[in-house]
Image: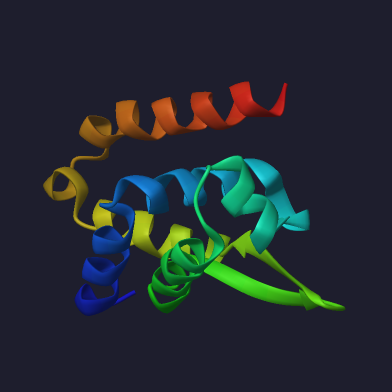
Length: 115
């Protein structure tokens, strides 16, 4: 991921509703959530939610999948991975022992979510 893409992703996630949408989609996993259901769960009108989803899509954080007449959104985990990799790329100036606590805390959060 390049710097411009990282800035777009961070700007997208820097808005309250979009951060909630992204977290909802990460929790939903690969089956995703229909656009209307996302709007309903987050108590947001559909046209406003469509604008938020478009920004997240353009930032490379979500993917839209058509399922008949329904558009289902999923978190783009490759985009998320790219964002995290960019942020961690130069971590601790080549001293991996300084980054280890960050990586371990991320691993713990992921493992807690799988139980």
